[in-house]
Amino acid sequence: MSTIFQNYLKDFKVKEKIVSVYSDPDSMDKFSAGFVSECTEDMVLLKHVSPIGTYDGYAVIRLENISRIDSDGIYERKLELLYSTQKQKHPKRLIRKKVNSETNLFFETLKVAQEKAFLVNVSLDSNNNQESAIGYVKKLDKESLIIQQLSLSGVDDGETILHVYDIEKMYCDSEDDRALGVLNSFYKKK
Image (cartoon, rainbow, N blue to C red):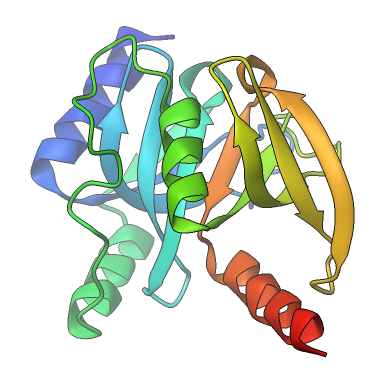
């Protein structure tokens, strides 16, 4: 990945300013906006912010899939204002271990998701042409994971096993996925 992209993201981590990261060149209206939490040689971890400036979990994206990064624009400044005005917070650090240039941010985020029972939305396709796996991390090792999947209506929907190294993009504890978790809890109580 371009050193310019990596340095740019690291600079915005220090500045604590929101960036918009585009990872689907065929659909420039789809992007992830948030504060840079971590950046390695291969991946970025964003403290994801919703379009209305609220906590929206985390996004992990492979740097090689990033086609564009916007910063300090009207949209990013609006999100910063909404986020601060609404007194929104992300934990200071999602990943407790020291992150270095070789750290696999997908694996480390999946570990946290498993520990805290956060829902994950895992995509093996940077352009989202393939359906994502949404659910709870059931088992995890350095190479693979098993996800207890949820349907789009929050019902248990079997399991899927994936290679960690095949993940292109992932969301963790997003607003939409937390809603599925609420539905899933409701159905389990019935």
